[in-house]
Length: 174
Image (cartoon, rainbow, N blue to C red; front, top):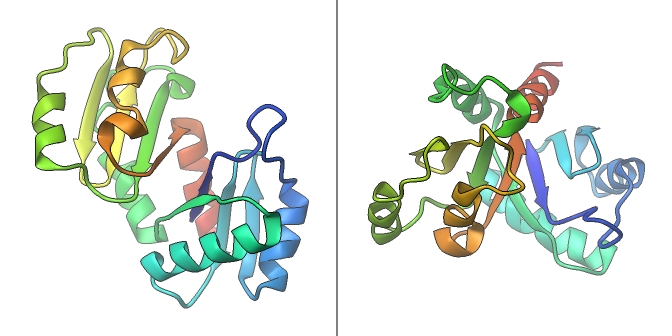
């Protein structure tokens, strides 16, 4: 699974999913499928995840004319992310339950600082390179969203809601 960060935001960095699929196929990737308009791609590649991230970032920048951060998870990793579901018992609205996919685990210092954050009734669980966040009142005015921003975490990150995460897992099985 390939997640592109920062495309199709308002009227900036627009990429149609049909054009993205065609581009990725032309670049030699197989079984290319997209989901929604926010840069969710399922494809087949023989490259290991880290090399695939770097290759796609280079290729997309050349083809699209702007840089795109890419985060990759294998089908097995995605299945474990869904299986783990640490907030599943409290997260009653899947559109308010987000998983942030991180390029790397945050530093020990950031993890320590996050442990002291109190944003109740919002909740979060950091599990390696994923951060699960429950925003019962939505993300718009979320205090938690500010605490777990990419800038605060110090690593490249992109978030997807639970509906999207589970749909992407389904797509990897097709």
